Length: 143
Image (cartoon, rainbow, N blue to C red; front, side):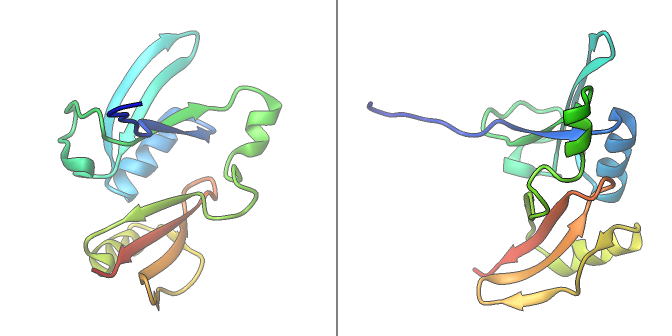
């Protein structure tokens, strides 16, 4: 298996509604809407990414860019997983190059934090929630 190259392209995040999720992520977290394609029958292919992730520009193509695929829940089982895809644990880790800039911006936009920021041996971190209660870490690693 010479020269194997793999990466995670997208991570599905079950949401209640496409438009309210897009609004939260783009307005409160400053994510970029990478793609929003109508697939018919109420389904859409909605990809979002943090700003400047993996060096790709908005709408840019970058095969190594990891995006969130907003997946609208359609079954009772999927609906029950909204906001709790990991059984109450932190699900996603948003790395930043300026913790306090992003923390204060998110705080000013009404993002819910579950704790006060803390300094750990590996960096500065705080747990926050998205609009459905999915837990995230905002994290700046030490160099």
